[in-house]
Length: 191
Image 1 (cartoon, rainbow, N blue to C red):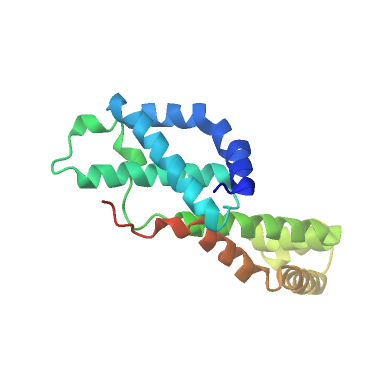
Image 2: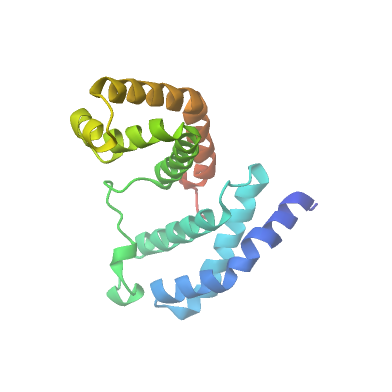
């Protein structure tokens, strides 16, 4: 039984990435005999995951799965051969790096914040950016813009209120979407 929408999504979103995926595998996996197997296993996992729910961003999802497959294969080897991997920088298995879930959520939050900033009135946006992004003091902002410190305070308060309203409950929705995107990271029983 085929799942028509998933088949179409897979052909439209995933298969065009094959040349890029192959180059990625060739750069990061020295054993050329395993590259086709890794690619096919990545495709199988992406397809399986998409049957439950399609990821929001197909390309990072495919490459994260591929990266995880390479890490799993290295872990299963009794002794890691230094020739197995072209460059250990890509591996970076340390826990201090944000998860793919956190990365996706942060990128989506950033897009939402940028859209909300773009909707602020021009002077309000300029004051908020100078105060909150550039880190200028109220006095410096007032001097640069030729306005009073009270106006700076009012514009920052107004801008922050409008940003909070614009973002509203969207942060939890973004985090939920990112969790769905990264749900495949759960350990699987490999036969």
